[in-house]
Figure 1 (spheres, rainbow, N blue to C red):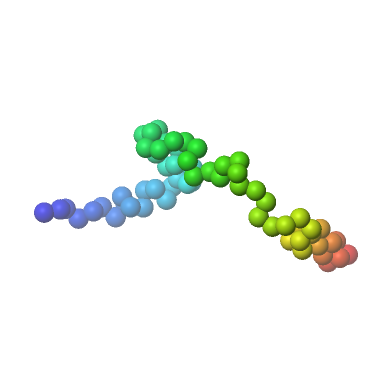
Figure 2 (figure 1 turned 180 degrees about the vertical axis):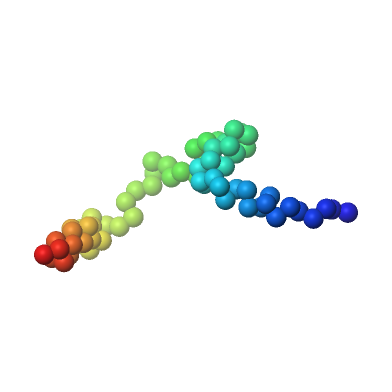
Length: 68
C-alpha cells in the first residue's frame, strides 16, 4: 500500500522558473536539444502590407496621443 504523499512534495517545483526544470530534463538526452523549434522553412505568417504590419505604429501613435 502507498503511504500518503507529503503535501510539500507537489508544491516544491513552484519555487523554480520554467527554464530550470527544462534545462535539467535536457541533461537526460531524451530528445535532441533543438527539437520543437521551427526550422528555416517557416516563413512569414501574414502577407506584407497587411494591417497587422502597422499595428506597432498605430499603438505608438495612440500612446503619444494619450500622453498629451
